[in-house]
Image (cartoon, rainbow, N blue to C red; front, side, top):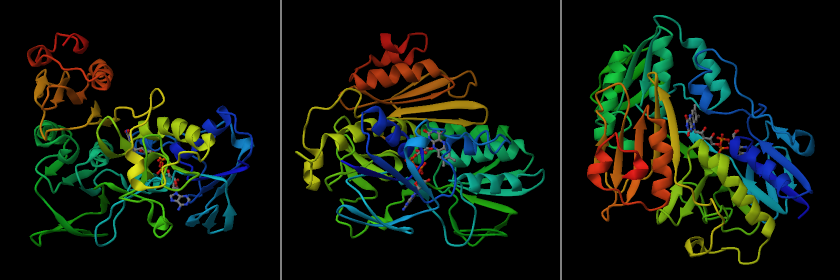
Amino acid sequence: MRRVVVVGAGLAGVRAVAELRQQGYDGHVLVVNAEDERPYDRPPLSKAVLAGAAPERLEPDWYAEAEMWLGVRATGLRPAELDTTAGVVPYDGLVLACGAAPLTLPGSALSLRTLDDALRLRERLRPGERVVLVGASWIGAEVATAAAKAGCAVSVLEAGPAPLSVALGVRVGRYTAPWYAEAGVLLRTNTAVTAVGEGGVTLAGGERLPAGTVLVGIGVRPATGWLAGSGIGLDRGVLTDAVGRTTLPGVVAVGDCAVRWSPRAGRFVRGEHWDDALNGPAHAVAGLLAGHDGWPTEQAALTAPRELPPNADPVPYVWSEQFDRFLQWTGWRETPEPSVFRGDPTDSSGWSAAWLSAGGALTGFFAADRHRDTSQARRLIAAGHKPDPDRLADEATPLRNT
Ligand code: FAD
Protein backbone atom coordinates (compact mmCIF):
# COMPACT_ATOMS: atom_id res chain seq x y z
CA MET A 1 0.00 0.00 0.00
CA ARG A 2 1.62 3.25 -1.12
CA ARG A 3 -1.01 5.90 -0.55
CA VAL A 4 -3.64 6.16 2.17
CA VAL A 5 -6.15 9.00 2.03
CA VAL A 6 -8.04 10.07 5.14
CA VAL A 7 -11.28 12.04 4.66
CA GLY A 8 -11.85 14.25 7.70
CA ALA A 9 -9.46 15.69 10.28
CA GLY A 10 -11.63 15.45 13.37
CA LEU A 11 -10.59 13.20 16.25
CA ALA A 12 -11.22 9.98 14.26
CA GLY A 13 -9.18 11.16 11.26
CA VAL A 14 -6.33 12.44 13.42
CA ARG A 15 -6.23 9.19 15.38
CA ALA A 16 -6.29 7.17 12.14
CA VAL A 17 -3.13 8.89 10.88
CA ALA A 18 -1.40 8.35 14.24
CA GLU A 19 -2.35 4.66 14.11
CA LEU A 20 -1.09 4.28 10.54
CA ARG A 21 2.35 5.46 11.66
CA GLN A 22 2.30 3.55 14.97
CA GLN A 23 1.35 0.36 13.17
CA GLY A 24 4.33 0.72 10.83
CA TYR A 25 2.82 2.13 7.65
CA ASP A 26 5.50 4.27 6.02
CA GLY A 27 3.82 5.21 2.73
CA HIS A 28 2.22 8.51 1.79
CA VAL A 29 -0.73 9.83 3.84
CA LEU A 30 -3.02 12.57 2.56
CA VAL A 31 -5.65 14.10 4.85
CA VAL A 32 -8.52 15.95 3.15
CA ASN A 33 -10.63 18.11 5.44
CA ALA A 34 -13.63 20.24 4.49
CA GLU A 35 -13.07 22.67 7.35
CA ASP A 36 -10.38 25.26 6.86
CA GLU A 37 -9.07 24.80 10.43
CA ARG A 38 -6.19 22.95 12.04
CA PRO A 39 -7.69 19.93 13.88
CA TYR A 40 -9.34 20.65 17.23
CA ASP A 41 -11.38 18.77 19.82
CA ARG A 42 -15.15 19.21 19.68
CA PRO A 43 -16.41 18.52 23.26
CA PRO A 44 -14.88 21.74 24.69
CA LEU A 45 -16.82 23.81 22.11
CA SER A 46 -20.08 23.60 24.07
CA LYS A 47 -18.31 23.87 27.44
CA ALA A 48 -15.03 25.78 27.98
CA VAL A 49 -14.99 27.55 24.59
CA LEU A 50 -18.47 29.03 25.09
CA ALA A 51 -17.28 30.19 28.50
CA GLY A 52 -14.37 32.07 26.87
CA ALA A 53 -11.52 29.52 26.66
CA ALA A 54 -9.35 28.98 23.61
CA PRO A 55 -10.07 25.88 21.51
CA GLU A 56 -8.13 22.72 22.29
CA ARG A 57 -6.12 21.80 19.24
CA LEU A 58 -5.48 18.17 18.42
CA GLU A 59 -1.77 18.73 17.83
CA PRO A 60 -0.67 15.45 16.32
CA ASP A 61 3.04 14.66 16.18
CA TRP A 62 2.56 13.36 12.61
CA TYR A 63 1.98 16.81 11.06
CA ALA A 64 5.35 16.68 9.34
CA GLU A 65 4.73 13.15 8.04
CA ALA A 66 1.34 13.64 6.39
CA GLU A 67 0.05 15.98 3.73
CA MET A 68 -2.99 17.92 4.88
CA TRP A 69 -5.41 19.68 2.57
CA LEU A 70 -7.61 22.03 4.56
CA GLY A 71 -10.76 23.53 3.06
CA VAL A 72 -11.02 20.66 0.57
CA ARG A 73 -14.12 18.47 0.41
CA ALA A 74 -14.43 14.90 -0.85
CA THR A 75 -17.31 14.80 -3.32
CA GLY A 76 -17.35 11.28 -4.75
CA LEU A 77 -15.84 7.83 -4.41
CA ARG A 78 -14.85 5.24 -7.04
CA PRO A 79 -12.60 2.19 -6.65
CA ALA A 80 -9.07 3.53 -6.06
CA GLU A 81 -10.12 7.16 -6.74
CA LEU A 82 -11.59 9.93 -4.67
CA ASP A 83 -13.17 13.04 -6.20
CA THR A 84 -12.45 16.19 -4.25
CA THR A 85 -13.00 19.90 -4.72
CA ALA A 86 -9.26 20.05 -5.45
CA GLY A 87 -9.31 17.31 -8.11
CA VAL A 88 -9.17 13.52 -8.38
CA VAL A 89 -7.00 11.75 -5.79
CA PRO A 90 -5.86 8.14 -6.23
CA TYR A 91 -5.72 5.89 -3.17
CA ASP A 92 -4.70 2.36 -2.21
CA GLY A 93 -6.33 2.62 1.21
CA LEU A 94 -9.07 5.03 2.31
CA VAL A 95 -10.19 6.04 5.80
CA LEU A 96 -13.62 7.67 5.95
CA ALA A 97 -13.68 9.91 9.02
CA CYS A 98 -16.01 12.63 7.78
CA GLY A 99 -18.08 12.86 10.96
CA ALA A 100 -21.61 14.17 11.20
CA ALA A 101 -23.54 17.37 10.59
CA PRO A 102 -26.31 18.88 12.74
CA LEU A 103 -29.94 18.25 11.86
CA THR A 104 -31.76 21.46 11.02
CA LEU A 105 -35.33 22.78 10.95
CA PRO A 106 -37.03 24.87 8.24
CA GLY A 107 -35.69 28.42 8.43
CA SER A 108 -32.34 29.75 9.54
CA ALA A 109 -30.83 29.32 12.99
CA LEU A 110 -27.48 28.63 14.58
CA SER A 111 -26.19 25.13 15.18
CA LEU A 112 -23.10 23.99 17.07
CA ARG A 113 -20.69 21.60 15.42
CA THR A 114 -17.60 23.55 14.41
CA LEU A 115 -15.22 26.01 16.02
CA ASP A 116 -16.69 28.74 13.80
CA ASP A 117 -20.17 27.86 15.11
CA ALA A 118 -18.95 28.08 18.72
CA LEU A 119 -17.24 31.44 18.22
CA ARG A 120 -20.31 32.86 16.45
CA LEU A 121 -22.56 31.67 19.27
CA ARG A 122 -20.18 32.95 21.97
CA GLU A 123 -20.38 36.44 20.45
CA ARG A 124 -24.16 36.37 21.02
CA LEU A 125 -24.09 35.23 24.66
CA ARG A 126 -24.39 38.66 26.28
CA PRO A 127 -26.33 39.61 29.43
CA GLY A 128 -30.02 40.05 28.62
CA GLU A 129 -29.83 38.34 25.20
CA ARG A 130 -33.00 36.30 24.56
CA VAL A 131 -31.76 32.85 23.62
CA VAL A 132 -34.06 30.07 22.45
CA LEU A 133 -32.56 26.59 22.27
CA VAL A 134 -34.47 23.98 20.32
CA GLY A 135 -33.89 20.54 21.84
CA ALA A 136 -33.04 19.59 25.44
CA SER A 137 -30.34 17.23 24.17
CA TRP A 138 -26.77 16.82 25.46
CA ILE A 139 -25.75 19.87 23.41
CA GLY A 140 -28.89 21.87 24.25
CA ALA A 141 -28.31 21.40 27.98
CA GLU A 142 -24.64 22.35 27.74
CA VAL A 143 -25.40 25.50 25.73
CA ALA A 144 -28.20 26.39 28.16
CA THR A 145 -25.67 26.13 30.99
CA ALA A 146 -23.20 28.46 29.25
CA ALA A 147 -25.87 30.93 28.11
CA ALA A 148 -27.42 31.16 31.59
CA LYS A 149 -23.98 31.76 33.13
CA ALA A 150 -23.41 34.55 30.59
CA GLY A 151 -26.57 36.26 31.86
CA CYS A 152 -28.83 35.50 28.89
CA ALA A 153 -32.58 34.94 29.21
CA VAL A 154 -32.68 31.30 28.10
CA SER A 155 -35.61 29.14 27.00
CA VAL A 156 -35.21 25.51 26.00
CA LEU A 157 -37.95 23.95 23.90
CA GLU A 158 -38.13 20.17 23.85
CA ALA A 159 -40.55 18.15 21.68
CA GLY A 160 -40.36 15.11 23.98
CA PRO A 161 -41.76 14.76 27.49
CA ALA A 162 -38.40 15.34 29.22
CA PRO A 163 -34.82 16.47 28.55
CA LEU A 164 -32.53 13.74 27.18
CA SER A 165 -35.50 11.40 26.83
CA VAL A 166 -34.27 10.07 23.47
CA ALA A 167 -30.92 9.08 24.97
CA LEU A 168 -31.91 8.10 28.50
CA GLY A 169 -35.68 7.62 28.64
CA VAL A 170 -38.33 9.74 30.33
CA ARG A 171 -37.74 8.88 34.00
CA VAL A 172 -34.07 9.80 34.12
CA GLY A 173 -34.70 12.78 31.84
CA ARG A 174 -37.37 14.14 34.21
CA TYR A 175 -34.91 14.10 37.08
CA THR A 176 -32.71 16.49 35.12
CA ALA A 177 -35.57 18.94 34.46
CA PRO A 178 -35.25 20.82 37.81
CA TRP A 179 -31.63 21.64 36.96
CA TYR A 180 -32.87 24.02 34.26
CA ALA A 181 -35.04 25.98 36.69
CA GLU A 182 -32.21 26.10 39.27
CA ALA A 183 -30.03 27.75 36.61
CA GLY A 184 -32.78 30.23 35.73
CA VAL A 185 -33.52 28.52 32.40
CA LEU A 186 -37.11 28.14 31.22
CA LEU A 187 -37.70 24.55 30.03
CA ARG A 188 -40.81 23.77 27.97
CA THR A 189 -41.30 20.08 27.21
CA ASN A 190 -43.85 18.57 24.77
CA THR A 191 -43.22 21.68 22.71
CA ALA A 192 -42.55 21.08 19.03
CA VAL A 193 -40.98 23.80 16.92
CA THR A 194 -42.01 23.94 13.25
CA ALA A 195 -39.90 26.82 11.98
CA VAL A 196 -36.92 28.85 13.13
CA GLY A 197 -35.71 32.27 12.09
CA GLU A 198 -33.52 35.17 13.13
CA GLY A 199 -36.38 36.81 15.05
CA GLY A 200 -37.56 33.72 16.93
CA VAL A 201 -39.31 30.40 16.51
CA THR A 202 -42.80 29.18 15.56
CA LEU A 203 -44.35 26.40 17.64
CA ALA A 204 -46.55 23.58 16.34
CA GLY A 205 -49.78 25.33 17.49
CA GLY A 206 -48.78 28.56 15.69
CA GLU A 207 -47.45 30.40 18.77
CA ARG A 208 -44.47 32.63 17.96
CA LEU A 209 -41.65 33.00 20.45
CA PRO A 210 -39.34 35.98 19.84
CA ALA A 211 -35.60 35.57 20.36
CA GLY A 212 -32.37 37.35 19.50
CA THR A 213 -30.51 34.05 19.16
CA VAL A 214 -31.94 30.70 18.12
CA LEU A 215 -29.88 27.52 18.22
CA VAL A 216 -31.10 24.12 17.05
CA GLY A 217 -29.62 21.11 18.85
CA ILE A 218 -31.78 18.17 17.82
CA GLY A 219 -29.14 15.64 16.85
CA VAL A 220 -26.79 14.93 13.99
CA ARG A 221 -26.74 13.00 10.76
CA PRO A 222 -23.58 11.32 9.39
CA ALA A 223 -21.98 13.55 6.73
CA THR A 224 -22.15 10.80 4.12
CA GLY A 225 -24.47 12.25 1.44
CA TRP A 226 -21.49 12.52 -0.92
CA LEU A 227 -21.08 8.71 -0.84
CA ALA A 228 -24.52 7.98 -2.36
CA GLY A 229 -24.11 5.98 -5.57
CA SER A 230 -20.53 4.96 -4.75
CA GLY A 231 -21.54 1.35 -4.09
CA ILE A 232 -20.51 1.48 -0.42
CA GLY A 233 -23.02 0.01 2.06
CA LEU A 234 -24.91 2.89 3.70
CA ASP A 235 -27.73 3.00 6.23
CA ARG A 236 -27.82 6.34 8.06
CA GLY A 237 -24.01 6.28 7.92
CA VAL A 238 -21.31 4.04 6.48
CA LEU A 239 -21.99 0.43 7.46
CA THR A 240 -18.95 -1.36 8.85
CA ASP A 241 -18.10 -4.64 10.48
CA ALA A 242 -17.01 -4.72 14.13
CA VAL A 243 -13.56 -3.32 13.29
CA GLY A 244 -14.50 -0.59 10.81
CA ARG A 245 -14.22 -2.38 7.45
CA THR A 246 -16.82 -1.24 4.90
CA THR A 247 -18.24 -3.22 1.98
CA LEU A 248 -15.57 -1.72 -0.33
CA PRO A 249 -12.17 -3.44 -0.06
CA GLY A 250 -9.48 -1.04 1.15
CA VAL A 251 -12.02 1.40 2.63
CA VAL A 252 -12.63 1.70 6.38
CA ALA A 253 -14.93 4.10 8.26
CA VAL A 254 -14.48 5.44 11.79
CA GLY A 255 -16.06 7.90 14.22
CA ASP A 256 -19.38 9.69 13.76
CA CYS A 257 -19.77 8.78 10.07
CA ALA A 258 -19.70 5.03 10.78
CA VAL A 259 -22.49 2.63 11.74
CA ARG A 260 -20.59 -0.30 13.21
CA TRP A 261 -21.75 -3.86 13.74
CA SER A 262 -21.58 -4.55 17.47
CA PRO A 263 -21.55 -8.30 18.27
CA ARG A 264 -22.02 -7.29 21.91
CA ALA A 265 -25.23 -5.36 21.25
CA GLY A 266 -26.33 -7.68 18.43
CA ARG A 267 -27.03 -4.77 16.07
CA PHE A 268 -25.44 -1.92 14.17
CA VAL A 269 -24.59 1.04 16.43
CA ARG A 270 -23.78 4.64 15.57
CA GLY A 271 -20.67 6.07 17.21
CA GLU A 272 -21.63 9.71 17.70
CA HIS A 273 -19.39 10.00 20.74
CA TRP A 274 -15.84 11.02 21.43
CA ASP A 275 -14.77 7.67 22.89
CA ASP A 276 -15.67 5.88 19.67
CA ALA A 277 -13.70 8.35 17.53
CA LEU A 278 -10.74 7.96 19.90
CA ASN A 279 -10.56 4.17 20.01
CA GLY A 280 -12.12 2.91 16.77
CA PRO A 281 -9.29 3.94 14.41
CA ALA A 282 -6.74 1.51 15.94
CA HIS A 283 -8.80 -1.49 14.83
CA ALA A 284 -9.86 -0.01 11.49
CA VAL A 285 -6.27 0.82 10.55
CA ALA A 286 -5.12 -2.69 11.54
CA GLY A 287 -7.83 -4.10 9.24
CA LEU A 288 -6.79 -1.77 6.42
CA LEU A 289 -3.12 -2.70 6.70
CA ALA A 290 -3.94 -6.42 6.90
CA GLY A 291 -5.13 -6.26 3.28
CA HIS A 292 -8.08 -7.45 1.26
CA ASP A 293 -8.14 -11.16 2.02
CA GLY A 294 -11.48 -12.08 3.58
CA TRP A 295 -12.80 -8.52 3.25
CA PRO A 296 -16.62 -8.44 3.81
CA THR A 297 -17.82 -7.14 0.43
CA GLU A 298 -21.46 -8.11 1.01
CA GLN A 299 -23.53 -6.23 3.59
CA ALA A 300 -24.54 -9.51 5.26
CA ALA A 301 -20.86 -10.42 5.72
CA LEU A 302 -20.35 -7.38 8.00
CA THR A 303 -22.21 -9.22 10.75
CA ALA A 304 -20.51 -12.60 10.29
CA PRO A 305 -19.07 -13.98 13.55
CA ARG A 306 -15.31 -13.56 13.74
CA GLU A 307 -12.59 -13.42 16.34
CA LEU A 308 -12.12 -9.82 17.47
CA PRO A 309 -8.90 -8.19 18.61
CA PRO A 310 -8.76 -7.26 22.32
CA ASN A 311 -10.65 -4.03 23.13
CA ALA A 312 -12.64 -4.11 19.89
CA ASP A 313 -16.41 -3.55 20.15
CA PRO A 314 -16.17 -1.42 23.33
CA VAL A 315 -19.22 -0.72 25.47
CA PRO A 316 -20.40 2.76 24.31
CA TYR A 317 -19.55 5.67 26.60
CA VAL A 318 -20.48 9.36 26.62
CA TRP A 319 -20.11 12.16 29.12
CA SER A 320 -21.65 15.60 29.43
CA GLU A 321 -21.06 18.61 31.65
CA GLN A 322 -24.25 20.51 32.35
CA PHE A 323 -25.62 22.69 35.14
CA ASP A 324 -22.40 22.11 37.14
CA ARG A 325 -22.88 18.37 37.05
CA PHE A 326 -20.84 15.64 35.40
CA LEU A 327 -23.04 13.11 33.62
CA GLN A 328 -21.93 9.77 32.22
CA TRP A 329 -23.80 7.19 30.20
CA THR A 330 -22.47 3.80 29.19
CA GLY A 331 -24.00 0.80 27.43
CA TRP A 332 -27.42 0.63 25.81
CA ARG A 333 -31.05 0.47 26.86
CA GLU A 334 -32.81 -2.84 26.35
CA THR A 335 -35.84 -1.42 28.14
CA PRO A 336 -36.97 2.20 27.79
CA GLU A 337 -36.66 2.96 31.50
CA PRO A 338 -34.09 1.91 34.14
CA SER A 339 -34.79 -1.04 36.45
CA VAL A 340 -32.90 0.28 39.46
CA PHE A 341 -31.86 3.68 40.91
CA ARG A 342 -28.85 4.03 43.21
CA GLY A 343 -29.16 7.03 45.48
CA ASP A 344 -31.83 9.70 45.44
CA PRO A 345 -32.20 11.36 42.02
CA THR A 346 -33.66 14.46 43.67
CA ASP A 347 -30.55 14.83 45.80
CA SER A 348 -27.67 16.91 44.48
CA SER A 349 -24.95 14.68 45.94
CA GLY A 350 -24.93 12.22 43.05
CA TRP A 351 -27.01 9.27 41.90
CA SER A 352 -27.17 6.70 39.19
CA ALA A 353 -29.58 4.46 37.31
CA ALA A 354 -29.13 0.97 35.87
CA TRP A 355 -30.80 -0.84 32.97
CA LEU A 356 -31.03 -4.62 33.09
CA SER A 357 -31.82 -7.03 30.25
CA ALA A 358 -34.70 -9.51 30.43
CA GLY A 359 -32.13 -12.08 31.62
CA GLY A 360 -30.92 -9.76 34.42
CA ALA A 361 -27.61 -8.63 32.85
CA LEU A 362 -26.49 -5.02 33.31
CA THR A 363 -26.68 -3.35 29.86
CA GLY A 364 -26.89 0.38 30.55
CA PHE A 365 -25.78 2.73 33.28
CA PHE A 366 -26.25 6.47 33.84
CA ALA A 367 -24.53 8.46 36.57
CA ALA A 368 -24.82 12.06 37.72
CA ASP A 369 -21.70 13.08 39.68
CA ARG A 370 -20.68 9.49 40.46
CA HIS A 371 -17.49 8.85 38.50
CA ARG A 372 -16.45 5.60 40.10
CA ASP A 373 -19.79 3.93 39.44
CA THR A 374 -19.54 4.48 35.70
CA SER A 375 -16.08 3.03 35.15
CA GLN A 376 -17.06 -0.05 37.16
CA ALA A 377 -20.38 -0.30 35.31
CA ARG A 378 -18.66 -0.22 31.94
CA ARG A 379 -16.45 -3.14 32.92
CA LEU A 380 -19.40 -5.06 34.37
CA ILE A 381 -21.49 -4.54 31.22
CA ALA A 382 -18.56 -5.82 29.13
CA ALA A 383 -18.34 -8.88 31.36
CA GLY A 384 -22.10 -9.62 31.11
CA HIS A 385 -22.48 -9.20 34.89
CA LYS A 386 -25.89 -10.03 36.36
CA PRO A 387 -26.23 -7.95 39.53
CA ASP A 388 -28.51 -8.70 42.44
CA PRO A 389 -31.14 -5.90 42.13
CA ASP A 390 -31.27 -5.30 45.91
CA ARG A 391 -27.52 -4.92 46.23
CA LEU A 392 -27.52 -2.78 43.09
CA ALA A 393 -30.05 -0.43 44.67
CA ASP A 394 -27.85 -0.04 47.76
CA GLU A 395 -25.52 2.82 46.91
CA ALA A 396 -23.20 1.85 49.77
CA THR A 397 -22.41 -1.44 48.00
CA PRO A 398 -19.64 -0.98 45.42
CA LEU A 399 -21.00 -1.89 42.01
CA ARG A 400 -18.43 -4.64 41.53
CA ASN A 401 -19.87 -6.34 44.65
CA THR A 402 -23.41 -6.34 43.36
P1 FAD B 1 -15.83 15.16 13.34
O1 FAD B 1 -15.21 15.68 14.59
O2 FAD B 1 -17.17 15.66 12.94
O3 FAD B 1 -14.80 15.38 12.15
C1 FAD B 1 -15.15 15.15 10.82
C2 FAD B 1 -14.39 16.11 9.92
O4 FAD B 1 -14.62 15.73 8.57
C3 FAD B 1 -14.85 17.55 10.03
O5 FAD B 1 -13.76 18.39 10.24
C4 FAD B 1 -15.55 17.83 8.70
O6 FAD B 1 -15.36 19.16 8.27
C5 FAD B 1 -14.83 16.87 7.79
N1 FAD B 1 -15.66 16.48 6.63
C6 FAD B 1 -16.97 16.21 6.58
N2 FAD B 1 -17.36 15.89 5.34
C7 FAD B 1 -16.24 15.94 4.58
C8 FAD B 1 -15.98 15.71 3.21
N3 FAD B 1 -16.94 15.34 2.36
N4 FAD B 1 -14.72 15.88 2.77
C9 FAD B 1 -13.71 16.24 3.62
N5 FAD B 1 -13.91 16.47 4.92
C10 FAD B 1 -15.16 16.32 5.39
N6 FAD B 1 -18.97 13.47 22.80
C11 FAD B 1 -18.84 12.99 24.06
O7 FAD B 1 -18.69 11.78 24.24
N7 FAD B 1 -18.89 13.84 25.14
C12 FAD B 1 -19.07 15.18 25.00
O8 FAD B 1 -19.11 15.91 25.99
C13 FAD B 1 -19.23 15.71 23.68
N8 FAD B 1 -19.42 17.02 23.49
C14 FAD B 1 -19.57 17.50 22.22
C15 FAD B 1 -19.79 18.86 22.03
C16 FAD B 1 -19.96 19.37 20.75
C17 FAD B 1 -20.20 20.84 20.56
C18 FAD B 1 -19.94 18.50 19.63
C19 FAD B 1 -20.15 19.05 18.25
C20 FAD B 1 -19.72 17.15 19.80
C21 FAD B 1 -19.52 16.63 21.10
N9 FAD B 1 -19.30 15.28 21.31
C22 FAD B 1 -19.16 14.79 22.58
C23 FAD B 1 -19.23 14.34 20.18
C24 FAD B 1 -17.78 14.14 19.73
O9 FAD B 1 -17.11 15.36 19.70
C25 FAD B 1 -17.79 13.51 18.35
O10 FAD B 1 -18.34 12.22 18.51
C26 FAD B 1 -16.41 13.40 17.73
O11 FAD B 1 -15.84 14.67 17.59
C27 FAD B 1 -16.50 12.72 16.37
O12 FAD B 1 -15.27 12.80 15.73
P2 FAD B 1 -15.14 12.46 14.18
O13 FAD B 1 -13.69 12.64 13.87
O14 FAD B 1 -15.79 11.19 13.88
O15 FAD B 1 -16.01 13.57 13.41
